[in-house]
Length: 211
Image (cartoon, rainbow, N blue to C red; front, top):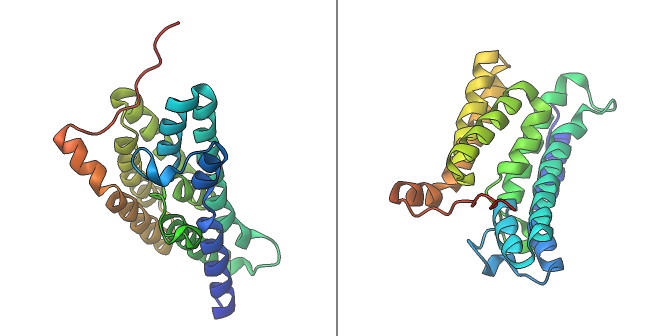
C-alpha cells in the first residue's frame, strides 16, 4: 500500500466524515443543534430535538441525518474498491478511509472540531467491509432499542457485537483489529451516556401513543 494512496484515503475519508449533516439539516429547520438537547449533532439528537419541535417531519429529518452519515462512511470505505485501485490494497485503503471518516465525523473541521459519536458513519463503513457482522450488529441494536428504548445502549451493544461477529466469522486480522478499535472508540464516545445509564437518568425514546 503506497504512501500516496494511504494519504489519499485518509484525506478523502476525513473530508467525507467531516461533512456535518446533522448540523446542516437542523440548521435548515432553524435549529442550532449544538445548543439543543444533548448538544450532539448526531442523528439521535437531531431526531429527538426536531421531532419535539416539528413532529413526524422532524423525526424524518433525523432519519435522513442517519442515512447521510452512514453513506459518508460507506463512501469512505468503498471508493478504494473501485477498479482503478490495486486490488491488494483495496481493503486496507478502505480501513484507512473508514477510520478517517469516523474521526472526521467526531471532530469535524467544519464545526470547530466538534461532532457526533460516529455510530452511523462507522456502520456505513463497516457494512462495506464486513457486511454480515454489521447486519448482526444492526439486529442487536434493534432488539436492544425495542426492549429498552435506549438508543445509546443499542449503539454500545452493537459496538461490541460487530467486532465479536467479525472475529467469529474469521475476517483478516487487520480488519478485525481496526473494527474492534472503532467499536472501542464508539463506546468511549458514549461514556457520558454510560454514566447516565448506570444512574438511571438516560433519556429514552418514548413509544408513539396509539391513535
